[in-house]
Amino acid sequence: RQVSTQSTGDELNKIIRELWQATYRGNDIEAIEIRADVETAKGRSYNYRVVLVKGEAELDMRGRCSAGQKVLGSLVIRLALAETFCLNCGILALDEPTTNLDRANVESFASALVSIIETRKQQSNFQLIVITHDEDFVQLLGRSEHADHFWRAVSYTHLTLPTILR
Image 1 (cartoon, rainbow, N blue to C red):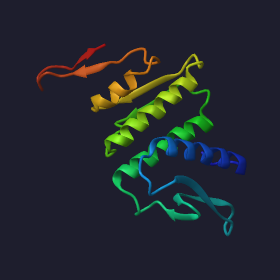
Image 2 (image 1 turned 60 degrees about the horizontal axis):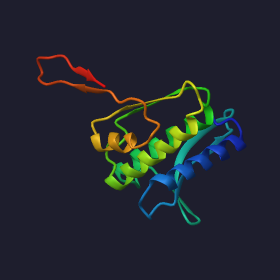
Image 3 (image 1 turned 90 degrees about the horizontal axis):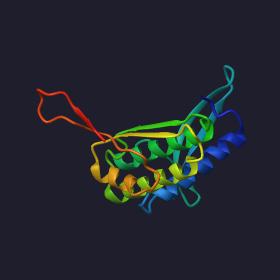
């Protein structure tokens, strides 16, 4: 979906900045933002890119980040897009969100998710679905009083079907 107005883009970048600063534990990148370059030669088209911000300097994120920074940036942008465009959508699904994150960023990401849960708890249809092998991450989310249930799929051998445990 296109960022339709400058104010929407500003709001999106504000949320991205807040989430990045709440989750990223390094000191080399202050924030990330989405930039839209408008091309009008053959009609209007947009070229979106993610930039790293440190002080007054901005650099394209592509080719300048670790795998963990890329994963965290992707998660932060997806969460910000959901907050900006999907307020009436009740499901937020994350598949292996801690891949390539170091422990400090896993902990801060879990904390950011707990904050989102607290913000959305008034929404009657809100559900967070996390698919992960990171049991420490699940425990961090489970420390929140807002987690109603955890389900675990367990397969004891390759010959048996997985068992779902609550």
